[in-house]
Image (cartoon, rainbow, N blue to C red; front, side, top):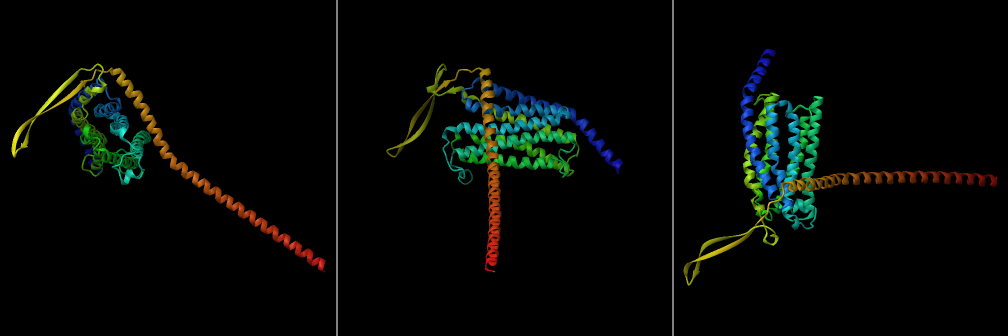
Length: 398
């Protein structure tokens, strides 16, 4: 039996060795395509950085593809780096999800009005500060938990108790998977509710295409990893650590090339090449005339009519890439810190209230016990005084 098991392991090793080199070449080519397309798109946004409130988050979202592609091809090339690459990939995935939510908020932030907190759950179509706050909380909690769980996985791996892909109670992998699944579902729920409340206002930016293209990266890669682990656990795929990791990395390399092509269209920089006419400073003004023929009914007869529509556009002057990057890092970092602090305070707030309530309850109970003891002492003293008085009266009577 042991000999048969060793033979199977050797067969998997041979298959991995045989397929590894072609997989690295093919995966590397797909990753290269993803890098070229994504970096070109990012440079376009940095060159025409006319709407910093939106574009700083678009750049962060698009940059997810180069991060995924680079780390996946490195991990595919050398499995020793797989855990470190997976941690970095997980951390940036959480930040990209936060950036996507922030991008949607930036598109409609001026329309936010104060509404009830309960509206987020029961009347999500109403916009308000509470909707904004809960949506941020859902995204930031995922970003924090994802980062913490990534480093916890590294620690458990060093201690030899992580068990990547092993659904056994004495390994950390299944517990971290459950926590991250809950956190991810909560983040997705918040994002879907926010999208449901704002999709009409977000119609000009075609939010559905952006939503689908982004979700396909974040959640498909996550469930893909879990699915591969389950297939390996049930023996459908070879239960071999290198093979399992290599499959995930190889698929991600291919998926990132597809995602990069999608991003060129859904996160195009072209809308930012122009400014409103009121903001024209140095840009070149151009007019585009559109003609259309309509049929107009007149005296029970249909006659053709020509309609012309002229749109005035102002071509935006190029911006400094250095200044654009500086705004993304400084201003974007400041927003992230603010939201993280807000989320932590929101999480700690109810706990502090709960602890305070418990302390107040214990304090009242202690005061009640002390008051009860004092009452008992007073009663005992009163009884003793009464007995002494009775004895004194009896003696005098005798």
